[in-house]
Image (cartoon, rainbow, N blue to C red; front, side):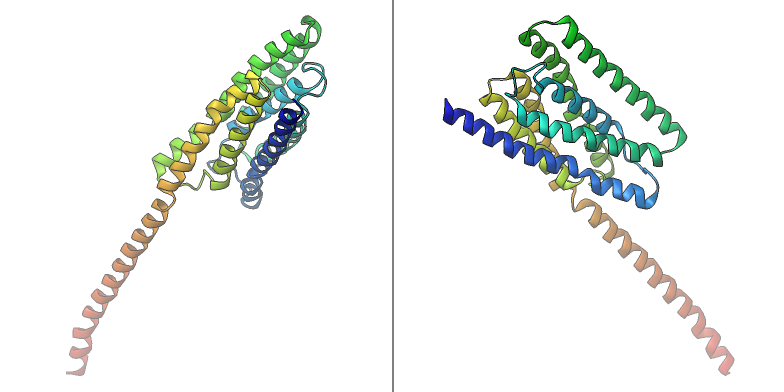
Length: 254
C-alpha cells in the first residue's frame, strides 16, 4: 500500500512538472502578442476553456470536495494554472480588437457563472464527499474534454495552411506528456474523473505531434519555392532589360 502511494505521488510530481511546462509554453506566444501589439490569428478560446478546467479541478482536489489532501498535486498545478490563464486572457483582451474584447468578456463572465454555480451547489446542496466528487467531477470532465478538444481549431488551421506557425511543437509535446502522466495518476488513484479526460487528451496530443512532423517542413519548402520563383522572375527581368540596352548602345556607337 505504501509503495503504491509513493508511486502515485511520484507520477503526480512528474505530472505537475509536465503541466507546468505546458502552462508556460504560451508565454512565448503572448510575448509575441505584446511585441506586435496584436493578437493576429491567435484564438482566446483554448485559454478560456483551460481557465475553467483549472478552476474546476482546483476545487475538485480541495478538501471541500475530496477527502482531505489526497489530491494535493492536483491542487498545486491547477492553482498555478488559474493564475497563468488569467494573465494570458488579460493580455489577449488588452491587445485585441473591440469586437474580440466583447467576445472575451462574455466568455469570461460565462466561466465565472459556471464555476460559481458549481461551487455553491457542491458546498451547500450536497452533503457527502462522494456526491460532491461525483458532481464536480462530471462538470470537470466536460471542461477537460473541451480543453483537450480546443486544439482541434489549431489542427484544422495547420491542415488548411500547411504551416505549424500557430501550433508550436512544445505545446503539442507537453500536452501529450502531461495527459499521459495524469492518465497514469488517475488510474493509480482509481479516480475516473482524473483519468477519463486524459484518455481524450493523450491521443489528441499524439495527433498534434504527428501533424507537426508532417507539416513542419511544408511551410519552409513553399517559402523556398516562392523565393526561387521570385529570383527567377527578377533574373528574367534583368536579362530582358539588358537585351533592350544592347541594341540601344550599338546604335549610339554608329
